[in-house]
Image 1 (cartoon, each protein chain N blue to C red):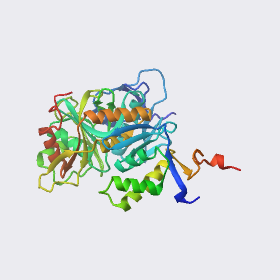
Image 2 (cartoon, one colour; image 1 turned 135 degrees about the vertical axis):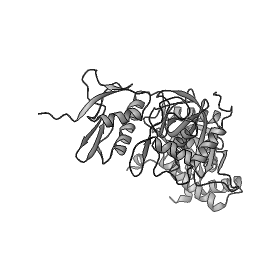
Image 3 (cartoon, rainbow over the protein chains, first blue to last red; image 1 turned 90 degrees about the vertical axis):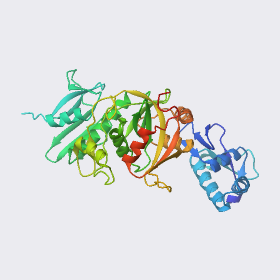
Image 4 (cartoon, chains in turn brown, purple; image 1 turned 45 degrees about the vertical axis):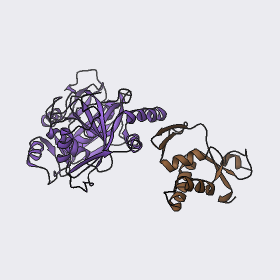
Length: 109
Length: 298
């Protein structure tokens, strides 16, 4: 599966607290707290539906026209990595809706 | 023959004894550097010390319930610092209702100015010079905070600024601090302020005041216009992230912590101070308390 085929979807059970344009997220099982700036918050909002990395970059570039495209792309990569590592976002293969999160345990033969 | 090298002391409100060197001068210094702790020879039932600070031929050794291994120090200043840190940890363990913020704080009028720790921003030096400028020191390193009430309470432990003091300090500030240095090494000095909830004093442990402002420090910043001190609004989100990232001790559940701190930064002014010399900044803050209500309390 190439990166272009991957779609990302956020978990729906994460506690959110907005302060100004930023959002603070709490992962219930780990008690980890994530702080996202305005771009990260917009990305989090977009992840209510499965979206590819390139789709996220394009949508955010349109929303933050005062920020360079390269900065948007770098932020998307950084936030996606953080959110995936923290277990807040799951990746799905494109075109297979409902397949669920990729989890090492369900990829065993 | 058993060699007795420590004696047991009560450090109320702790419920277990602490063991200190049999050294009247050392114990007297701890008296001078605290306010509101009941320090007296232990007379309670036999109990293992919660903290032990002993002396040997090479210096001092500190052990406690929370240290994985004994910590060794060559001089009394560093040993005292670790003793106080362990004392605060022990105290905070008994006060689960309070969040221990990594911050300095001093009362101006009836409210607290709180400086969350942000790198090497100089909160200890600024907090100490606030005493010289007429404020009352609550803490230079860790502030117990009631998120529910929006208050901070004093730890009753003297501040420990870096030494040598900045060359730019004016004479009156320098004299105020140098006259009160109780112990020092080449890097830090403990300043024994008068034990009083008053201007220039060290507030009594447990004294509670409303938090009047959070101020993020930018010591390098200065001002383009030439003013030595400049205070500007800070992002509430940045202040909140700093507070959450800098708390010490045992935290409350994460969701409750986030929601409570969000409410706190909503109602307390969040500011950033650009300054060059701590004594100038301290005089400015005492003359112009940056509170929404002028410092009359909330």
